[in-house]
Length: 264
Image (cartoon, rainbow, N blue to C red; front, side, top):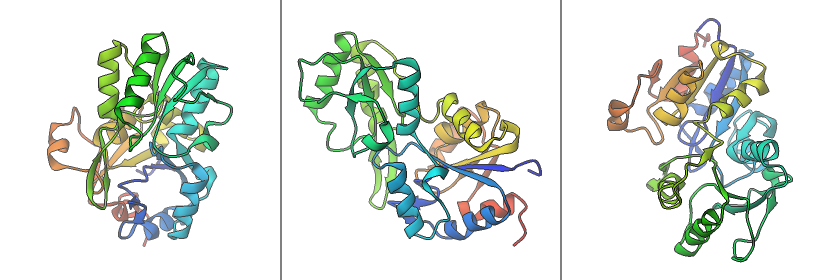
């Protein structure tokens, strides 16, 4: 770990649960910052903009700013601009993220006669009802491409695990007989964007997450050291059934400074 100079950190389930700081997380991040390590908060959260996330974390005491945060919506906007410039998109998402989508052209989902080039699937919520999913399916049948911000099946809240859009995405893929282009974690491009943002190579970075597949093993596939925390959505059975082994496993983010060899 002596070569580490950049730390990629998931937010939900690692630093917070339902946006409330986990024990010791604020102090641990301050210690990492104080040691001079570069930090990027990398999240598949699709319910808030970068500015909103930063404000909430700052209010909780975390030393972060909007420029420290890389979200799946922001990466999705860059992906669409590069691969589908000018595309007319239908967005299926819970929460207002238009600010982070920049110049992406969004159609009104209620306009069922509109012709969409891309169906973009974000995070699940009440908006994922039959009418919305069936509308997305009809666009796909008419030739629209399918882009997903992530494949997460669930996330952790104060009330327990809640179903996420990955479960619905599987149904859309099967019904439309196509595979979604995934822009957030575990996409290699997402980790590449984070490393480029920090100016670090894979061998100089660690990724800390509570999702063994999307956070940790996906980062390891990209050459980044993976650290799994036993908080958030972590489940022992998921850990045991995973396709690989994390480089490191710690009880919580509060234990990361010690793992990095930072003096207390």
